[in-house]
Length: 484
Ligand code: NDP
Image (tube, rainbow, N blue to C red; front, side, top):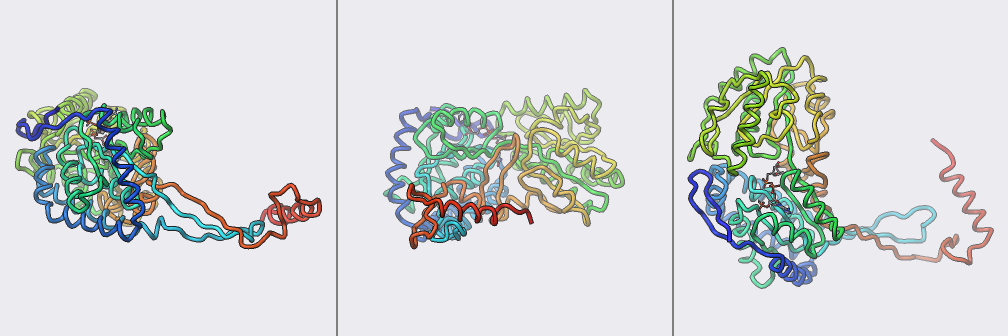
C-alpha cells in the first residue's frame, strides 16, 4: 500500500494498493476479454457509451475537482477548467472516430487499375496508459478517450501522486458500462508502470518526464510494443516589438505561474524585443506581483516534495551566475509554496534556461531582433510548444519555431482546439494526441484489395510473357522516366 498526501497540508488523503506484475497482467487479460465486446460494438454504439461517460464526468465535476485539489493541490477553479477542456476532446473523439478511422475506398494506380482498394484503422485491442499528476484528468484522457473511441479497451496507471483521480474516472466509466472492464486502473509506483509496459498490451500511451519516457521505451522494446511519448518541455514566449504588451504579459504570467508552473506546455522562458523590453518587464512584474501562492490562493503548492530542490537549484544557479530576481527568488520558497519569481539577466546556459524547472518562475531575456529570439527558443533538446506575441509577424515567427505546436497572440490555444494534434519533437517526445492524428495513434492501418477483373497486364505470375515485360518496360519509361 502507499499513501497520498495533500501537498498543501501534508495530511493523508488516500491509501492505495501497489499493484504487482500479476495484478497488472490480470487486468490486461480482463481488458482483452472486454476488447472483444467493445471492438465489436462499432463506432456509433461506442460513441453512446462515451457520451454517457462524458455526462457522468460532467455531473460529478465538482467532486472530481475536489479529488484533484486534495491530491495534487490544484486550485478548484483551475481543476474545473481542466475537466472542461478534457470533456471537449472526449466529445470530439467520440463524434469523429468513424469518419477518421472507418473503412474507406482509395484509388488504385494505372498499373493496378483492376484492383479495388480500401484502408481502415483498426484498434490494437488493449492500450496501456501511463499518466502524470500535473494534469491528472486532461493528460490521461487525451490518450484514454481516443484509445477507447478507436475501439480499444484501456488499462490506466495514474501517477502515485494522483491515483484517486484515475480511480474516479474509471468508476464513472464503470457506472455506464458495469459488465465490461473497458477502462481499468492499476495503482502503484514506477514498478507498476513498468509492469504495464511489459504486459500484453498493443500500445503504451505515456505522458511524463523525458527521463521516465526513456525507461518506458526500453521496457516496451522487449516486446516491440509501440509507444506514444508525451514528454517534458521548456517552452518559451516571444514578444515582438509590435506586440500587445498587456496581453503578452497576461499570457506570460498565466502560462508561467498557473498550476504553480507545473505545466508541460508552461511558459518557462520569455524573449522580448529590446524596443519594448522595459515596458513589458514592468507590466509583467506588476501583474505577477499581485499573485500569491497559498492554500486557498490562485497558485497552489508544489506537488512533489523533491521538486522544491530542483526549483531552488535553478534559482540559486541563476543568481550565482549574475541574474537578478525582480520578483521572488530564493526567499520565495516557503515549504511546499513558492511565490512568483521573475529572473532577468540569466545566462543562456544556466539551469533555469536549459532544464525543465516546473515551478512558478520565469526567465526574461532582452533580444535585439526576432532572429536572436528564435535562435534561443530553438536551442536545447525540447520542442513541445510555444507562444508568439506580434501584431504583424506572428506567422513568420511561429513557422520558424521547432515545436509540435505554437499559439500566436494567446497562450496554449493549440492544445485546447479539438481538431488540432498535440505533441512534441526531440526531447519532448513523438506521436500525437487529439484530433485525427490522436485517433490514428491508437490504431494500425489495415489495407485491403479486391480484384475487380483479371489484369490485361498480369504481373505477379510466372506466366508473365516477354511481350508483357516489354509493354511494362515502355509504360515504366513513360510514367517515371521524365521529370516535369
Ligand atoms: P514522471 O515521468 O515522474 O511519471 C510519469 C508516469 O510514469 C507516472 O505515472 C509514474 O509513476 C510513471 N513511471 C515512473 N517510473 C516508471 C517506469 N520505470 N516505468 C513506467 N512508468 C513509470 O512524470 P511526472 O508524473 O512527474 O509528470 C511531470 C512530467 O510530465 C513533466 O516532465 C511534464 O513536462 C510531463 N508532461 C508532459 C505532457 C505532454 O503533453 N507532453 C503533459 C503533462 C506532463 P509514479 O508517479 O508512480 O512514479
